[in-house]
Image (cartoon, rainbow over all chains, first blue to last red; front, side):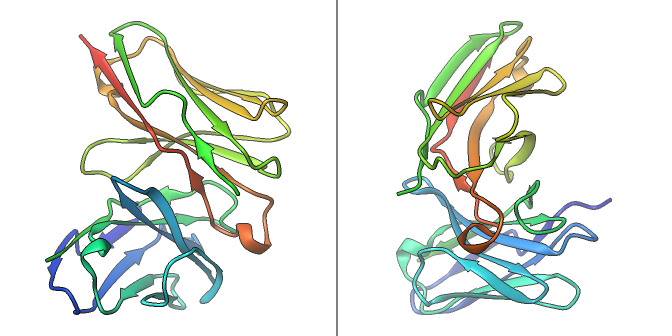
Length: 113
Length: 116
């Protein structure tokens, strides 16, 4: 069974631009969570989707948004990029409700210049 | 507020030794805990988990211990190998539902270095 995939793997953007990241969960998994990882803040929860509904959201500004499609694939969008948004963005999928095993993808490395 | 923290940021061991990585958590409502291993350039890899109704769980070469009284979690790796060198994170999630859905709270991480 294929693992969690994320595209693109690397991205360089300029301040003020927007970016869309994609995540395909493990087949059959319905919950997708997104995390931001930085050296200073560690791994921080962004949001979680289940059956196309956002059920939980972390403490990030409204510039960070996401969605989930009927096939459980998820995207996250960051608008008006800031230098501080440079990070590794990870998505994780779980089978049911996000309170079971979460399996992570390789991440998308976003650099904002 | 909720937090999960690690006592030791770095741990160096010799190949073949046993390693113990510790983690403290503050949310007494946490009921599910996971240990992850993250190698450079990769996403966190699931190692082992434990629910709050257990105090010990064993996997292949790994054991997780949970002490709810002092809110402490540990990961024991037997016969540590150079391939075990990575950053190890503990993570916790509260009761399923509500503000806990899909939200893992991670510790800062411990860098494990295994010397041949």
